[in-house]
Image 1 (cartoon, rainbow, N blue to C red):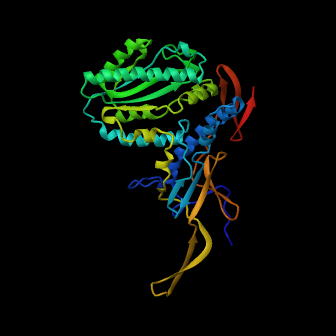
Image 2: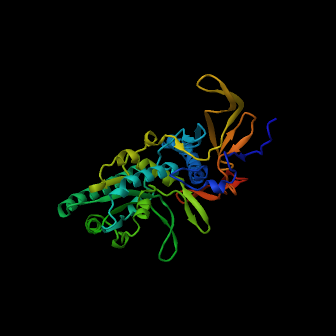
Image 3: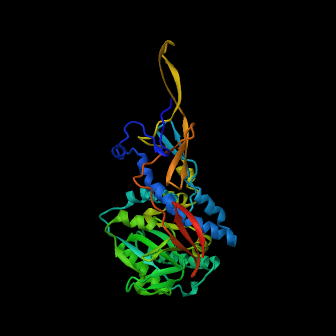
Length: 393
């Protein structure tokens, strides 16, 4: 008789002490490492759900991409009891799971090219954005193109002045949203803010800043340069995302769905990462493009995946066809589905019982935040019994 298993129990091969199984050896992965991915899915879905709702209402052309991103990494195939493989990667710039993969792959390309003995820096280039008040996607796209044109002209002048112009440039756009001033802490409503984040050699960055001030209507104090002391941390900041969806204040959090939808339309088919000098090439265009599924949909070895047996036994024979013993018959593959209620991957066995892949001491809580369209409240996206529900305002 099959033993009774508690609903949503955790299945493991070997020891049930999961704390001991989190330790890495020789690059091996543990299923507990999937916690970060589960948290990224939870955060991503919290942003995408109201965005999908808004896109349906205004008939946005971005709706298919939102749905594709929402379904990303929701299914895992377990094979041979040691491998996991995602069935779908979206590659969307709104997907925190794919952005994390993309960032890691770029880091692997860039870090070997950087000499710690050289002087590196980080530069932020902005522009006045008064003309972007309530801008549509076409206006925003034209502004981004003009910024790239100016940057390209500066690059040509830098190449004539310096033997090497080694830079990594990322485009980041903040949507129209309430912001807090760093100087006095006052909250104000800011317009779209497209800007460049640049990592490169110090002398080249200082030259770029001076040339940018000559060509762009901007405040000098906002063209911020700082020497780079932690290269890895700086690159992570540079590569991590193209826009920030959720804004947090002490009084609560909110998201401007119209602003994000406008940005996604404006940057469609636009390169976000540009490389110069020694960083040029390296298949960055392939990694930065949407089609990262071609280089990421591969199985990964995990040392502590749960073993799934069919309940049947098969006979083993030696080379002379002599019977040795009977051993449990294992499934060749198992499909795990993401369940937002428990923030986990769930497998349902033949007896209808559900099992969790990852062990949580406490299921991550879902927060409440305000969904905005520009300055106007759209609805509240709140948690009730660990399930997000819409509350019209």
